[in-house]
Image (cartoon, rainbow, N blue to C red):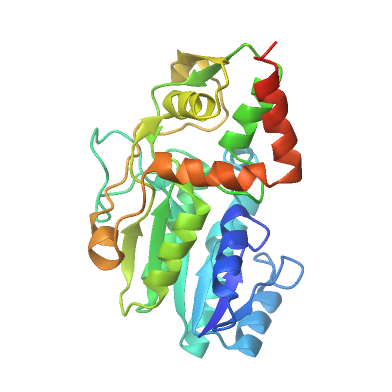
Length: 296
């Protein structure tokens, strides 16, 4: 099959490319210099010349707080750019899988969100991602895959931030009233590839199993690395951000499980991720420093 991947320099795009570039598929993974979501010429040119069977669209404007100040640009990337990519997909009869976010929900349900639940984004980032979803869902070969709390080897994420803080901090304050599931981009990428081979459309939810708070995630990161940095749970009200965050965006993944199987547990995923981090030059040093300061 011929795959076009957007967001190659991100965490998910990096792992998608590794999985798909196996000699069995033809993969085109343009950077933003070649396919720029703010430039319609590059979008149509990339799709029409490559003529993919499947587009996996992971590129996005993801700076949640900054989006409140750069509303027009965030919308241009996440909504307008996605709509143009859908138009291009239609021209070549390609399937398009759009990676979306739990932030399309307001977090007030107090139970895991099903794929058909009503959306109500609280921040501009979530609103622009929902507009992108609508464009994809208006196409009979469009699929939306919502995920959350991703971590991978390529790029910044919560795990790397906590480990870097642990090098110098005896304790850290972490929000304890926002709930979701940490999601390893390797596992997510594998499910996206499986979904790409189905004759299905509509919405799926995909994250590793094992919901927790951000504070709970931080405790797991430290405990599994024998780091003694103390995690002080705090409410969202004490962690000021420009954009409002939904409190409880746990996702019901039953449709995913029925069609392509469950994703592994967050704990299992994190253990495999640590094996990957140990072999990363920068992060192996960070990890060593974080652990060694507690051996003194």
